[in-house]
Length: 563
Ligand SMILES: Cc1ncc(C[n+]2csc(CCOP(=O)(O)OP(=O)(O)O)c2C)c(N)n1
Ligand SMILES: [Mg+2]
Image 1 (cartoon, helix red, strand yellow):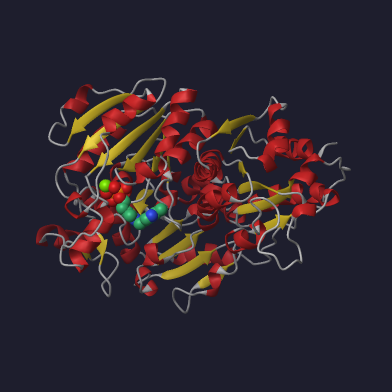
Image 2 (image 1 turned 135 degrees about the vertical axis):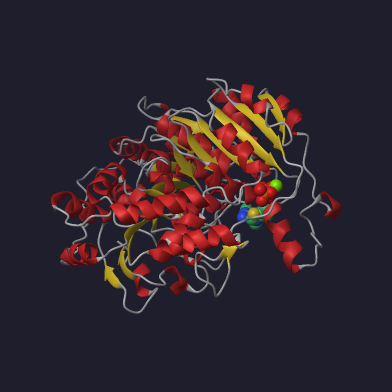
């Protein structure tokens, strides 16, 4: 079988329906093989970075493996940002890069470069992939491709890079059975969790991205129903339960919901599941996360457990699936009614405490989305406002770029999410971030897909501007129009791409009463925000995690403290 045909057969075997790529001489064999395969749609983006983000969005929304390909040289260097995004957010993805023929590569010679556009792809990628595999001969292709797909989703998911020279793609190869990867065996008595849960009076689950990316959403929901205790999330995972669920108590962290952080503060047992508890969650002083509680940490990645949050934490190195199996197979002996009531009171009292006009605008707009829509955010103020104002329904999903926090993610990730779900996607970007992959408007226009691009236009690189206001005496170099940052006329941009445009001013929220998204096809909605934007609430270093800025008014503070 021809090498590139074999690669495509493995993509198909893994139930991947859509791949994202950009042409180049060293991937022409792969593209030709994709062309011949009816079960896979080969999509053309207009920049390799967008291909990689689209693969991320596809995987994040569908639970399948995201696949993107690019030419070697500049195709690969453009792909890098999206690969790093997949690594830091643990997204199961396979990136395929062409390379010049092995005979043309520089090899052991002392030259800077030999082949046209030749660069050391695997060496460059090796710092931010689970594995970079250079397939330097046709007889290694079979094992390499199978290994890439297996490894991307096993254990802690993440990206695998395949560097495949053109001569390997066009070679005839022999096919053989590849070896299965090892299954992780916890070998730990998880009864300890049961004992601690039953002994606690105010237990809560703190659930992270790993549950979502391991395709455990359904099992998780069943386990939560069975346990019947409050759940708080880290930001990437807060869509695992609908907003109205009686167990959903928002997302915690530096910019988390006040009520969620209060729940952590008032808990006596926090069971953290598949959450790496990074600095965005804990603040710089990690121990502030667990002031009064005991902590159990369940993580599939042993390395994450090498850094403790508190010295007496209980660590369990296992897959969340094993935990949920255990929860579902046990009977649980406690009554959480009172504790749930307290959490409910906190949620009711503190929800929306920091909302500004722009939150209500976003909330109104999001309420017009389809019941099974996905939402993607870019990076900046608007990203947190999206998380704060979304009231997700059962089938709605929210996707972010968090570890890498890369501007330019939202629109291409929305494209991937559309093909991952075949449902409407609302893609929110700032006026800065949209310009980083604005060329993908041509993709959604060409394919006529229901990706609704919402631009939160606060006329500034808001998140950096706020930082400069605080720390550089209001000298906002490069982030406001006074200091050299400008935006284009977005109505003209929409017009150029042939996309329907709507403008909504922040003082005319009434306009949104009548607004409806079109059922089919792309749209661009510009929200014109005239007041300066700020990020609240925020964690204050050295304080309890619930003592966020700005301070609560005395009456509310007294009430929530006594709960
Ligand atoms: C690729 C990239 N470059 C730079 C940054 C640093 N950065 C973080 S937020 C931000 C401002 C974003 O501005 P905008 O898209 O308008 O969103 P806003 O904060 O105004 O809502 C910048 C420059 C980044 N996260 N990613
Ligand atoms: Mg902005």
